Amino acid sequence: MEDTSSQATPYPTLLAILKFRTSITISGGAILFLAVCWLGFRLGIPDLYALAMAIGVVVYFALKAAIEVVDLIAETLMPR
Image 1 (tube, rainbow, N blue to C red):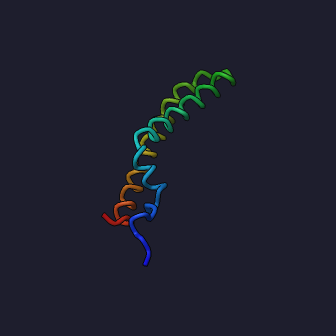
Image 2: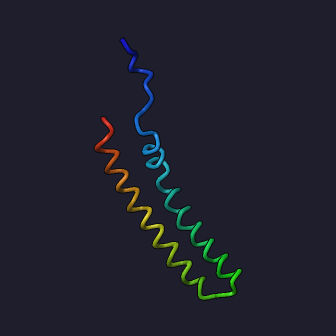
Image 3: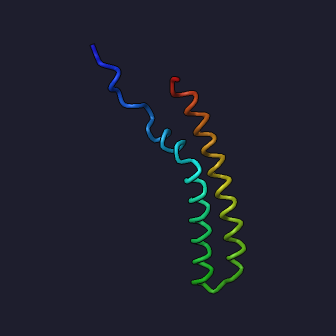
């Protein structure tokens, strides 16, 4: 017979995403914000600074929505 007490948890990536959901969303938005700001600085286009803020906010909310979908999937796949 197999010992089921030492089995690895199923779907470890889903668990990691759910554990670090706040860090993922904030860092994703901030990284894109900084990347577009850097691009605006390097190209000399100050209009990109305003666009960077909008892109950062959109990415933040898109990641937040995607992680909510992951949460829903995790609830249906993983036994309690």
